[in-house]
Image (cartoon, rainbow, N blue to C red; front, side, top):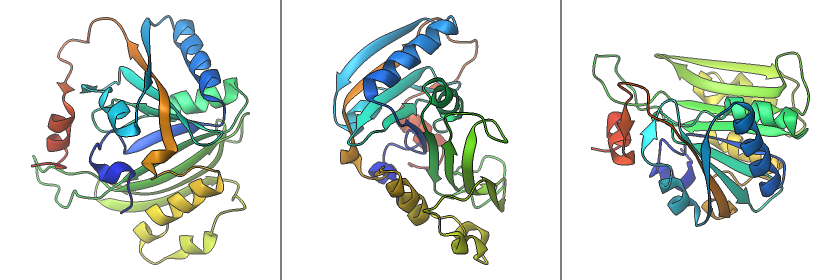
Length: 237
């Protein structure tokens, strides 16, 4: 499976988002949104390669408390966060794409390594997802198009929502094996059609901003280093 940085920083790279707006415009809008939510945050500008920038998201915690916004070699700005099981860009990308009147994109590419449902088994459920957001409302929220093939607790499912886009290869969706209907190759192809080199680390940065939420952690909250989170998911021995 093709992955960003060969998944060596997963789960930080399992799921990420994009907004089709200049970097500083997205930063300003995100900071404004946090203030509207009455949240206290610290903003730290960085100039780093993607791998070093992502390490600034440690430690990992759910719900996430750190977000990384990065410029890219395109018209899009990238979004990552420090969730223990992977990023959760749905709300920020969905909301800000409407606020900024631009397209947004949420993608996920996660290997399937959970081959047993036995208690205590470590692994990840496979998923490949492409979710394109419109600048305004659609039939369901502002989702222009959603395509997902994922293992839902032991069973593979394939779902689509919205209008087929010109770059899609819908004939692939008829594959006999469900997990073959939407693959990492198709995800990469669709992102390229939008001007996003999803799995190319050189596409991201070097300008970025780390946004960290202030305040005490909730009681009994789990906080893990990246290595601990990877071991928990069976990504590292």
